[in-house]
Structures are given as structure tokens and as C-alpha cells.
Image (cartoon, rainbow, N blue to C red):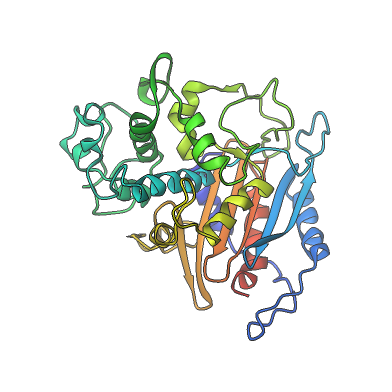
Length: 381
């Protein structure tokens, strides 16, 4: 299942009336009695009903992870259980982590969010539509660059002028990732691979850069971008709608160069929660972690989604995050969906509450969004 299919599923079934958990929440006292048994009693039956083999779930309350639980198996053929350290493909939730790397580069004045990216790497923008030379990092992170989700030809086609609309674009993330690789890393002549529209992409060291500058500083020491499924240890295998494992090969250096920022992260709920906690507790003058001004800018609404085209209930998009405004308060949101994988994270910056769930099934959206509905009110507690 690719992201466009996942979004379609969510539009049909998101927030579909799951029973809201009763944690004895009192906003006046700002206290919540958290009962992990209630969570488990909801998640396990949903997974069984919708044939979701495995999941990794964590909850953050007032800036601290208070609960982390593995569910099910990582592969239905082998029956190997998911544990707290099992890695899952994050799919498009990867974009939130890459966005923080870009925000740090902007904070350090390595690049400007509002200068054309062609100023930093002219060769990438030299051919094709002249509007390529106008695209900025802000437009890419807020999905207002005018680029398609993924290219269908060469040169890359535009769907509107940069900065004048909204369209979810993984292609834009590849473009920004390539600029980051040029500024702070290496782009190699080989190995290379052929991807969308017969386009050749060659390896970069973006995985090493993200590991050193984002993952490890946030305590995500087991998270990664490169995987060889046939030999991988403790990684959740993606499954189809009948719980049959997909046969997947290697997510190698060329695939990372193409997809790392848009959907290539391997992590789990325990490690991703550390990243969220870093947003709740920004650091001033830290060489790696964002300061408060950068976090505030990252979660500030930038693009308005067209009516009827909301994603995951979000009416606006910030820099790497969807924004869902409700009467109770504002949430930052991101989901992910690709073959055999569905993920979701939602957080309240104001209350420092959040949850994240990764699943290894095409059916995972039935679980992730029921959980979101059940926990919705608690994110503002």
C-alpha cells in the first residue's frame, strides 16, 4: 500500500467512532490516570479483527514516555514475536525526522528556508522547467512546491507555480535531501539505480549524515536507513491484507539516496518517542538538537489544504507536519503508508502529550486510526 492508497483509506475510515478511553482525565487538575490494560484490551482485538500481525506503540505524557508496548509477530511465517527493539519501516513518518535536520541547518545558517535551493546546488535545477529554480526548502517541507508526489517523466512536471497551492510531494523531499547531501555530505558516482520514469539515482551518504546528526543525538541509536530484508535481524516484515509476508529485498544505498527523507527510516515506537520528546524539550545552542525558535517555526501552519482534500484530518500543513485544529487544541500529525506498512503519530506541543504506532500490515490503518480516535481527547490533558 502506497501513501495515496493509505490516505484514501483514512478518508473513508479515519476517526470511525471507536470508544473513547476513560482515563479519569481532569483538565482542571491537568492529571491523567493512565491504565495500560485499557490500551491493550483495545489494540489486540483490533489487530486480530483486521489481520494485523505486529505493532509497536508508545505514549508520551507531559514530555515523558510513560508506556511502550510491542504487539504480535514480526513475521507470520516464522512466528517471531515483536519486541521493544523490533524495527519497523516508518514510511512517510520519516519526513518528520528529516524535516528536523533541515530546520537545524536553517538554525545554523547553512541554508535559508526561503532562498531558492538552486542557489545552493545549481546543477540539479539547471534543466527543465524554469520554475525549478524558484523552489525553496519552506515550500518543500510544507508541500507547496508545485511538484507531484513522484515524477512520471523527465523533466519533472509541475502541477502549479511554487508557493501557490498544496500537493503532497515525496519528489520534493528527494530534491531537498539531495541539496543537503551536496552541502553537508557526499554524492557518489556509483553505485546507481534506475527508479521512477527511468531516472538514474546514485548513492549518497545521507544515511550516515542522518545517523550522526539526528538519530544518535536523539537517542535513536538502533534506528537506521539501510536494510537487507533476507539477512536482517529483528525487523518487522511487511504483510499484505491476508497477513501474508511480502518478499522484499535490499533497501540499499541507491534506494536510500532516492527515498530516505520521504520514507526510508527504520525505527520503532520506543526510539521515535525520543525524537518527539526532543521537540517537547528544545535545547539552546546545541550542535544537533533544535532550539525553541526552530521548533515553533517547524510546527507553525504554512499551507492551507484545499477543502475536501484534508489529510489525516489536517486542515493545514507546517514544516514536515500536518496540523489538525480542534476546539480542544492543536495537534501535529503525520501518517505513513507503503507496501505492507502503516504508521501514525500525533502530538500536542502545548501539553507535551503524544503517541506513535507502527504496524507491519496493509491493514494497519484500521488499527492506527481507531487508536487515534480513542486517544484524541487525552492528547490535550
